[in-house]
Length: 274
Image 1 (cartoon, rainbow, N blue to C red):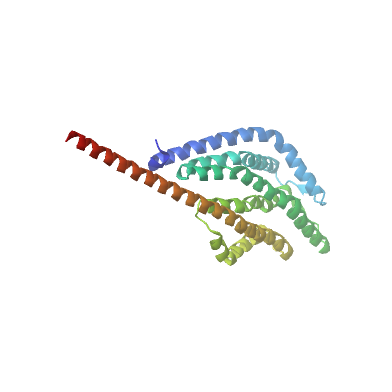
Image 2: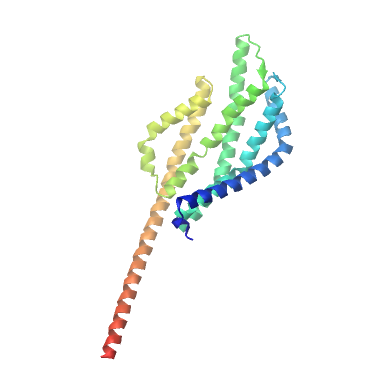
């Protein structure tokens, strides 16, 4: 059956099957994450100690909670390519062959950009924010008592959103490649997009100007990069559209020629009968 001819119920069933596959891989990733979560938690604790931060647990369940959170985060990162592939496989029947092949290539780049966003925020942004906060505490003669739960919550809140925000170029390229987004639209709505990114930065970053700018400027740069990528993707879309129209015209001409030949053949047969 042609996937385009599926009913709504059949589409929902198809989506359910693909989500089930994602869930299976996620559970398998969790099983593997149990063995690597502990050294990662210890590494993150050592990173905190390098900034003269002594972490404390204020209840007995906090270590288990942190351990489970890290397991879920690792499992999500590991299984994210499977999730992206299954989503691609679900929407790919609505794309042309050339679009399916092009968008399938985006999956590894999307995964790498997610890791790049995490790395940028963890190795560049997070140390600066921590040093600033600890320096401010020293200047105010405040000795902070930091809970490990709060420390990891702050770490995740600052780093994980960047993994998703770094997907912006891939998302823009995808929609440009299928003709749903043009670089002209991105340029026209640049100021509104900047405002939205500025608000995102305000949510992610601490309420301090330097940290806010350190988050905002990379996001603005990502948007400008997305505009350049959109020009490339939309140009390829126009080329594929031109090729499609040419193929349709050739197919229509071929059909008309075949119909004319068939009509001529029938006329010759009728003349022979007479």
